[in-house]
Image (cartoon, rainbow, N blue to C red; front, side, top):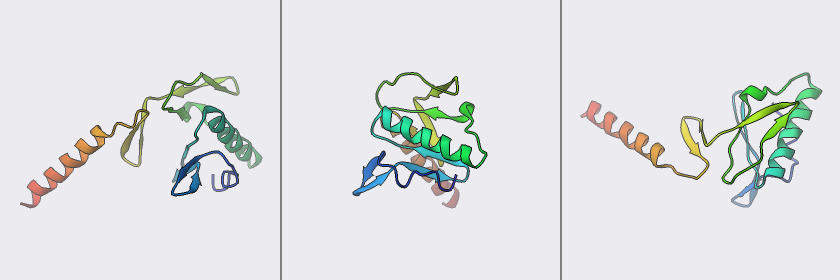
Length: 118
């Protein structure tokens, strides 16, 4: 959704002094927040803005990942699945910040391309 009211929201994480609360690519949106309450607020804002234009969030496609334990969420009576990791633009993002698997995959790709061109 192009304008879901997220730009005005105070929730998010600070990167280089700027508040970032969402990453969007094609039809995927990743929401980011410092707390469970902030994340719920962002998700409800997206839900409300979507409904204004006749769109509905697919709870089956909605996932939550947190770096600390969170409570079970329900939206419109449906439970939102909690994930330990997810793939974003081809990179595995983990709740604990472990990037060894992504680094291993990158090194493997470089090694393969070096062998192919050599």
